[in-house]
Image (tube, rainbow, N blue to C red; front, side, top):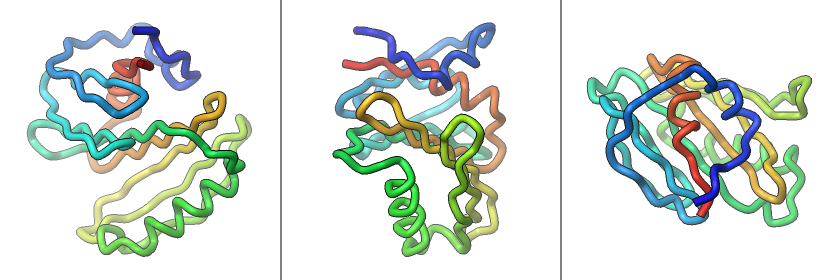
Length: 146
């Protein structure tokens, strides 16, 4: 399989991890790090720490012709309709052209979302709870295109 060339994954140089199971996300696979468990509802993989203190959700799929800004607005609207979140922030473009926003789960846990364009696809990464940026990098580094 070809390693997905994601700018986000460039941050993982120096991050090493052992991986357990591999999940099938449709157009990608993702290796679950040891000490974590995962599930998939295509196109989203949900990788959770074994102690349930943190979680990383990764969605990778076709943009289907939508601009990244329109996709960000639609995703925020959908998150806002969900009972899983008590608040959903407004997506803002950062200096790289990615969209970022914050959310709070119904139980008060903070989440941060990043939406990035990758060719004709999008990559949505949401970290929740006690998942550090380094742990997010470790999870994303386990992604492979099919």
